Length: 209
Image (cartoon, rainbow, N blue to C red; front, top):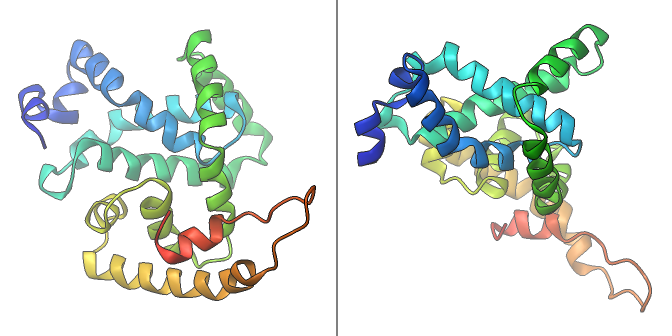
């Protein structure tokens, strides 16, 4: 936790004081929007999820532990749970009303900002597509490190696992992706006018993404 976060009292203080919560929201909303934009390509769904993540903060503020990482890392853990839950329930019609009501927490200008972020984060979504075949635990670590640019320590904190566990999962994920990336890296250069293969898998496997 940096000096500014200590002065504000962190999430626990923010949920007790509307003014502090507004500061907390403004301090982190861009990072949360980017996290979501790397995982969905619909601006209204992204708006719903962004709103739900900050609503979840109200119930989860007591779980924040400064020694385990920054507020942003903690928020990424919440955001990942919210996004995962949305994926599981997206097909259920009963949840549509919840997404509509959540979207009302954001203004029209926020939707426009999210659309811009969706465009900017499209490479991140391509990387995530390359990770879908990994086991859940390995994919979770790889997403946070390769896509969200967290360190191994921060990824472990966001997922609530030990650092050594995160390192083992990262090693296994990169090994599996390298095996898949070899045919892409070895493919001949296509002729002019032919679409290039997506190199995201190669970069992730090498640890360059």
